[in-house]
Image (cartoon, rainbow, N blue to C red):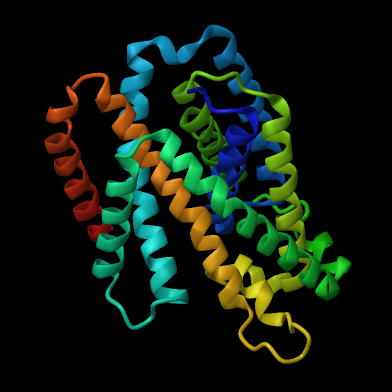
Length: 283
């Protein structure tokens, strides 16, 4: 059964938004714009030559997926430890996260996408609510100070564009569906809006905060009686991060599936998962 366009669009939106948030501290307005254009032209080129058919491409994506799953598992475990489960060990958080991903990821793409679709209504509602509430705290003067910031522009632009290109491989070649330019443009427009909103609210503080996309909601007061409203949005972002990890894991599973029989697949997946957990905790 082939995924419908809406399913791919939602999955791609979640991937790109999670990548944006996880790379937020290294981004500037220029790196987002230039990186987005580079990724768009590169993806269109890849679509034209069907680059995923080459074995070298699959091999590269396989090892890149292992590296990114290790790196992002570390970052997301610390995100959970810093913002949600402050009294829990990072090792326990990382292990639980990876174990959940392991069992759900082995169920196949359609099971994963069903979980994502069911959760997406909640995700989008909370995200839009957060943006609407945060608009009241915008200070336009703050944007002028950051709009042309160019710290490490080359490195940050290349890193961001490569991340966006990798996100393309998680959805379209894997499901053998055609990429649509508007899927990328919708996601990138939303990320740019998020960046401008955060910088306009936080101003110079944005350079000193570990999770600025969470801290903007510490200023929000919902109807005057709900305290620590940022917890709601922190959990919302956790869903985005979890689904990114899940789809990266599935990419590893998908590429291994073509080399091993189903009964033989468990052992290499367990070994790879153990190594990912081990190195993510060493980071």
